[in-house]
Image (cartoon, rainbow, N blue to C red; front, side, top):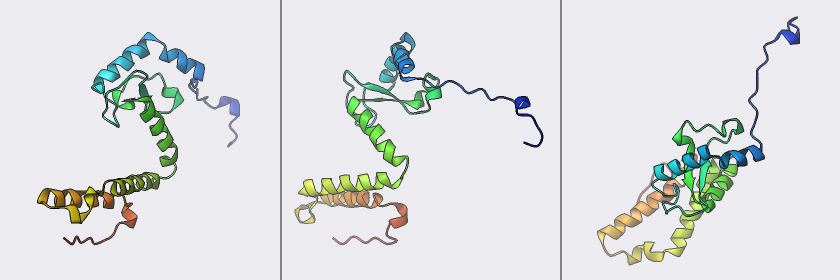
Length: 160
């Protein structure tokens, strides 16, 4: 190390990571309970993802997963009000999305295909007015947005 004794180097003090017991204790604190209630009101009492009313057992989700920031309540945008199921789903999806951004495109494609299969109202033969045609066009446009930009067609034509 260029002749510098290790003992003379400045020591970077690491902030202690929160243990699960410390997290649980923090979530039981009055500060957290006030913050949680504030975030519920901030979200208009609705799940951020589904838009459905929050029920008992909802989660105040930490967007910042760094354990050193667990007790940092300085930024509302780092938190999200979610139902238990949505919270679990978000963590499940994050596990894959954080490693492979195309995960979200495949998920959207699978959901779009399920909608297309299970909602036959989108069959062009059943369309009888301009609103229905516009609805079908928007549905197809949404399907195209499910394709990663690198795989998107360069030209699209719609035939009615």
